[in-house]
Image 1 (cartoon, rainbow, N blue to C red):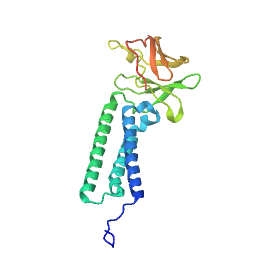
Image 2: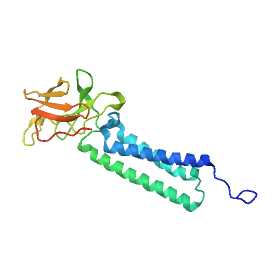
Image 3: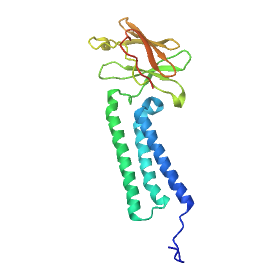
Image 4: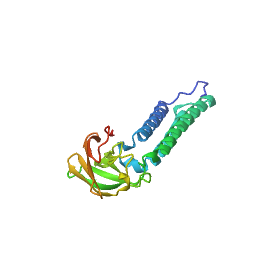
Length: 219
């Protein structure tokens, strides 16, 4: 209460600041969801996506917890509801982040990638990651656009022979043999090609050792 007995007037600036904090917290959570759902959206997030997601969740929780008092929730019950909501949202986000991290080893996308081939025009590249399951690096198609570089959702998966021993044969060479075609050669002389759509990174055709049913979806 003010000295004359009238209720205090809540500052309009405090209300605006509290609303901005809530909106920023929601934006950070949306960014985390995007990272979890589509880590290949920006190739730069692949190696550090887990850490970036964790930091964004923590910042979002702090913003939501602090927005209540700034917004003007002065009574204990109201503040308690605000803190509880912030805690629940943060814990749910942490749970989703943890589950996504547990599933990541299936594709090993968090492993460091090494460039093995670059297209003639410099727009695309093929990177490899070690795969202890098959004993030979997996190959992934990427665009080369700096911060906004993307990576295909699935590996190229050439020489996909569930009942054979193709994965035991070392790779000899990986190269771009066309504007949108990758050729993979094994040391024993076998080879295969994969055609892809540049804007979507979807594999549209497979020949030789790369042939298998169904196209690979891209990011």
